[in-house]
Image: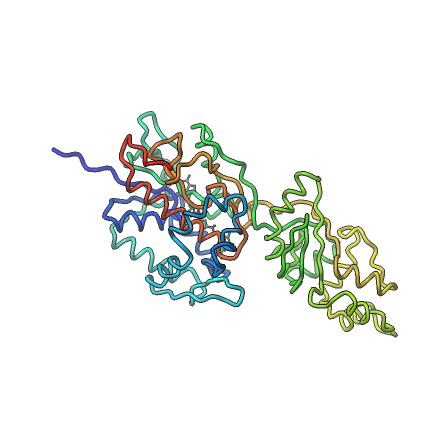
Length: 415
Ligand SMILES: Cc1cc2nc3c(=O)[nH]c(=O)nc-3n(C[C@H](O)[C@H](O)[C@H](O)COP(=O)(O)OP(=O)(O)OC[C@H]3O[C@@H](n4cnc5c(N)ncnc54)[C@H](O)[C@@H]3O)c2cc1C
């Protein structure tokens, strides 16, 4: 009598887990996917609300530069499943993609739901079994995976090889809550602390700013922090600011807060107007116009941008409304004091995670043979722009290939 073969087990049905499931199942392997949530892809669907920025058209050097310290580590992984291959995969599911003027790539439907539906149909036809409401809680003494079901039952599963694709800890109500950190820590796996990435920042706004301007966009600004620069948009929230330029400067802001105890971001509110032209416009007499009307007409500032000048607690500056030269200078570099990064609950992604040094080239945990990791739970970070999903998909493909060549007790060849 032959014993039934053990399945490949994937824990975490986000984009990383599902991509690895597809790869393994397409090669004829039996794959079981477990997730603590009832349905797969909850965060993927949320990402779709913003259009689902899948990847970016940057050339390879610029693309990889977005991953900062993890750039060299990710290079072979992203080369092996590139942005073009990701777009082809998307098209193979009936969703052509397009690149916006910024180079960001989106599915034509601008949503995640049609793509996810087609993807789940494909996984089903490949024989992948999904087990929802199964929370992974670790291993038992025999090395079997232990899950807790919705009715608090304990289920054990023996795996041929396991992929942990458990995500980071942002938006924990969607499933990824970072609970895996203590489980891996107990096994001696090196993990960098999970912190918010692509998160808003907290600023001590006045009541006026809190009440009147949440949602207002500061468009076409340049933001600077610790010598790093970001161009784009910032959005006022009731606690501070969020949006592209803030996310991009996130690592610099985090570093400043850790090292200096505070972070200052300088905003150029009229990046398209050189200082001397702005000064010329502001030296013209204001006449009987209110300061707001004058600033709106002469400098083209929005009401929210004008309100920023009155935020003395946040800027540390009393706006020199009667000194056009100083005012123009301030318009080009308005300091904003950041009190803290917003929490993980609403951040787009997570920095920190399983340290790169804990992994083989195939993304197997060196200390836990047969256990692989992929996606956001690995210690890389990137700004928004499609770099997050691309790295999740590429690491999943890499891990799936490592799993496919893994045999009990035989470590895949390491470089
Ligand atoms: C608002 C928002 C917008 C975004 N927009 C974009 C975008 O446009 N482009 C982009 O590139 N990225 C975007 N992202 C980021 C992107 O969604 C994530 O990087 C990506 O989903 C991470 O994929 P993952 O598979 O690693 O983890 P996740 O998608 O987080 O999936 C992890 C899965 O593991 C499960 N899990 C966790 N712990 C357990 C456990 N103990 N037992 C069982 N299951 C468990 C979770 O339930 C979850 O389903 C966005 C994120 C947010 C929050």
